View 1 (cartoon, one colour):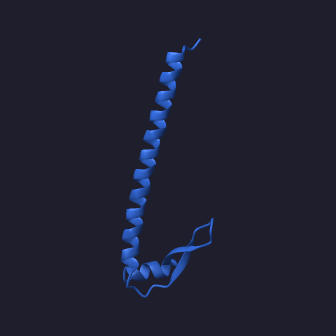
View 2: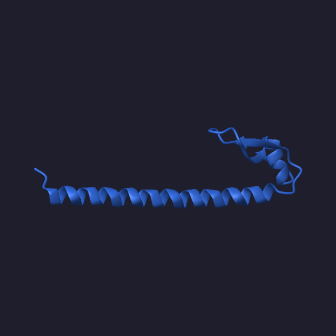
View 3: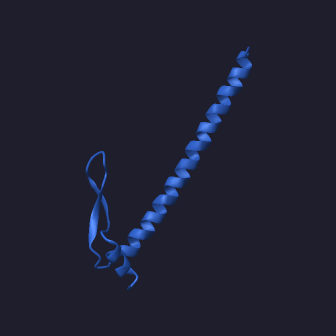
Length: 78
């Protein structure tokens, strides 16, 4: 039968695990954001046609990206 002390330790371990998971997710999100910003800088100043990216919850346009593979290839001069 679990003791109150053991249950407390189990709860503390679970909290620590959740905190660690949250921190890892935040790091991954920040890395994705940095990669996204780099891609957007690459498209900046090109004549590539772009399509909107919308927030599915609000429908608000967030950013714009190349619409087709041909447009993406045009960035590389192909």
